Length: 185
Image (cartoon, rainbow, N blue to C red; front, side, top):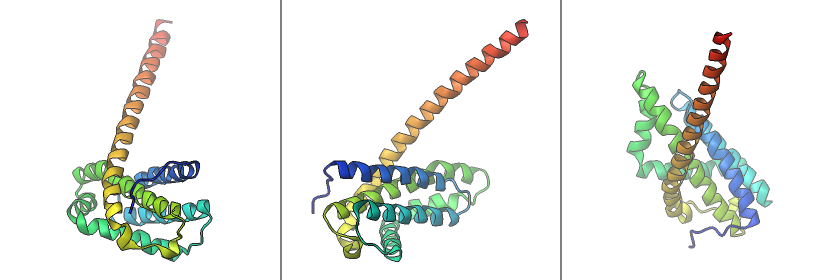
């Protein structure tokens, strides 16, 4: 099965839906409570599936999308159990665990959401619906997309961090200038 997605006007709109939900999932990855964060991330992925189904105008059942999401995540977790478990468990370690969780889980959440979205797009672009979704058919592509997604999300996070540092530096300089101006009066 071809794993590349040809970018069309339709896939560009669908990709925007995925990107928006990746950002939400990364935010959910910041929730400091283990299991609550995963529930929030899963809910976002189910919401994304519903949005993509509506965007493509295909029939869906929410429970079916939820089952697909959980099955895909289970496929990933079974191959990467150590890293997912470590990221989730690390949050329970006072201070250091919270820092580790804040750094790693948003990237994992974003990468997983990216992969779920890309697999959904590939499936829906082929003219099928969620009613005909085959986990076993999509599993290998999903695992590749997770790794790709973590790279994409990590790069976006670094770019965002650099922009925030630049904004912070600019604000700090303006504030220093304003304070110095007031002190000279």
